[in-house]
Length: 196
Image: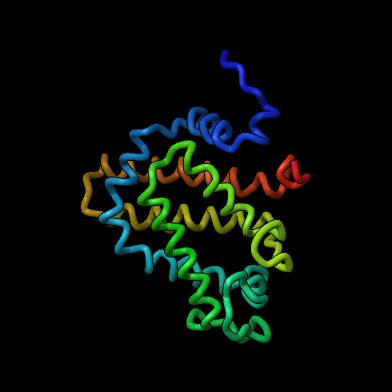
């Protein structure tokens, strides 16, 4: 039985990543599978982002979080959710962020060095980073990660890969998204919330 220092899991991001990867079974082979699929998935990222935002803007409970000024956005903000469309400049700004996120996941090694990035993805959706007036409820972050998993799974099955390669890629992406989801959720529960 392997001894895990549970208190260290809350303060050492690399240790947390390594534990999660080992527990879930995310290996260097999974990372190589994702990296090798980059040339196929990369050109599809804009469509993945559009599909994701189509869903985010379909519900008032998620769309309302795009009304307030997003950190780094200098343009005019919408007055309310009725002004939000996929073409609104603030939504275009947010879409660019999601494009960069997907690109980062597909082009960087997936090891403990990725943990600060995965952690910041969680933190920026809380008042602890970005606009302090924007606090996304945990349920919406979980829903978003579930949606992103589905969007990626759908596209994997369209790639010019064998069924075995598609299955391997699908599992690797799923494992990586579960790790990402943990790095998001730690900012809603545990020591990250209490500032430790």
